[in-house]
Length: 194
Image (cartoon, rainbow, N blue to C red; front, top):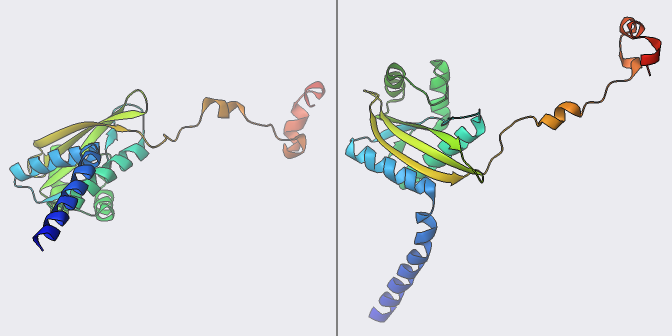
């Protein structure tokens, strides 16, 4: 019986040892771990995670993806209560605060009061070389707007920015003459109509 328990314990330890590098290497887990530690030091129990803002060119999709991944890591640990995204978006829209993640102290207090949260997680991100993004996350006290903690990590950029390629501007076919209104066609000199 003791040999069976020892074998099971050894197998469980082996599985955990093999899995540790995978989870330890996840930069989102690192950000969440730092934010949770700051939350514990600041006696924070309930948080809202706002969209992250691009520090450079617009990238709304990236801001949403980053905030969702960090939110899922925070909620998955079970140490913090995380406000559901749809409730957060509804309150921000009703208050016309937007979801950009950029809040002044008055807005931080208002979001905290409306959602009943102790702190707000927000941040910025910057595109780097080789499809990497540097993420700067902050845990902000909802009463004072003071930064309780921060975390930084570089992550793989696994999304595309919605932009129209320059080449698409030149890939336009002119409609046939039949589709132009008659007065416009008559204004074009005869040699240029073909």
